[in-house]
Length: 49
Length: 378
Image (cartoon, rainbow over all chains, first blue to last red):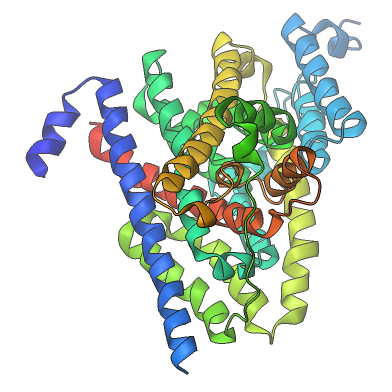
């Protein structure tokens, strides 16, 4: 991971922006997936309760 | 004698242009009702700060060390206090109920953040640095406080242009989104019906949600904690059920007072020598690009999801476009479009669920940008 970051630090600005895009979109989807999972679990618990 | 007329003799052509810009913003606020609560104070702030020898901004008159606009800017924007207080107010206004009833809508709120990142890439191609490009891209969050927060950290010299673009385009969502949606969808797709299931959301979930969201976001991107924490604190006040007075105060007094000061302070950053630059025009142009990409990202994601859903469970792809943070304007626009295509087609609750998700998504995206960009900038 560190090697990748060092490599990107030496890349062009556009390549860095593409890396932020990939990481950012994955991060947004992953974080919101966790929120979805929380709601999903609450529905499950709610139905069992 | 010259000293008597120093106010007149100090006027420059750049100042005159800024007065026109200020008057144009005030006109948009009053005549067109485009985000009047912000554009009017921004417009007046732009006039104030560009008065000759401005005592309001950074004074050049001996005896006046700091103008009141400079004090507001230092206290409210440089410290990031104003956008965060706005988030407390916004959090107190948000009802996540429609999202809890349609939890899958949360992913539309993620997809519609595409515009932030796509615009950032475009901005780097136009010669902006990564930090500047990230600040420009965040206009696509369709969320004024997030734009101000990120721009203040990464590109304070473009704060005025970015803020004006963010608030202007947010108010123009009814003009920006429909043509993009119509371009990317067929009439048949726009006529898809969605079924809304009424269900009771347990109170503990409404209370636990802001706490858990804050913690998860803090673990994923610690730098986003001020943003998400302020929003969720406001929401917790609302949902706790025992702080009605505080909730009302956050939604009304706090929101009104901070909005007033925020607008005036943003306007005060529109000093002619900084603002009148061809890059300001580029930023305004890219703000529009960001909103178009956001809308396209949401619609295309919804269409992609539909490929994997049985015909009876397909979602109207217009709902994907509501995944931006402009709440509740985007949801209303999409409901209006659905009604135009087929009278009586109600998709509002799904649209609101998607729209609320966009508020979460935009802040998380802002946090991601804040966390990732410094990794690559030496």
